[in-house]
Image (cartoon, rainbow, N blue to C red):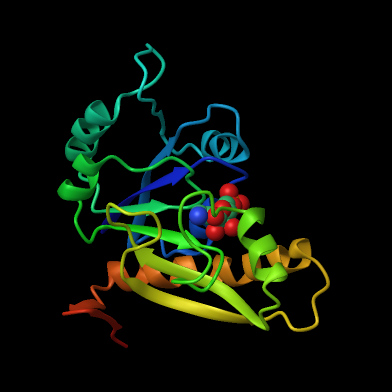
Length: 203
Ligand code: GAR
């Protein structure tokens, strides 16, 4: 069984697609972590009885510090952390503790269109303005630099006929909803192989 924690800040459509499509005998969503109490993703977690951990760098009764969260993760034995629209930077202690066990979904073809401030519609606007013909979704390992970790998998979307960043967002989101569950299942099956600089997904 692969125990996962999903970090969210927004609408939660990737959380929903993960929850609905992964095989429950293999993968358990043990925690949803958010920096925002009022967002679609947290409401979805509550409705689906997934434990929610609110996290903040400031002290508050309601919120866990990242250090406390790390303690909780050890207790509930989290194997893999999945960032699905989480907009805060993950502290370095987490990255050291979960080396090659934190993944992020990004709504473009990295290494282009990544980095600080590149999230959600900002990404699609940049892609649209650069007149790219192809966009897509990337799942990559998280390291200490925004959107810099090794790419695990990508899917491609033909955007040559699309007329706005919003249309690109819509098409790419459909690809994201397939790609993220696919990669998480590969982790559960131990099919993600790190071979020096390349990540290989075995059949
Ligand atoms: C997704 O499109 C995800 O790729 C993006 O935020 C959206 C969250 O949507 N993440 C980033 O831009 C990270 N740089 P969701 O809350 O509906 O899953």
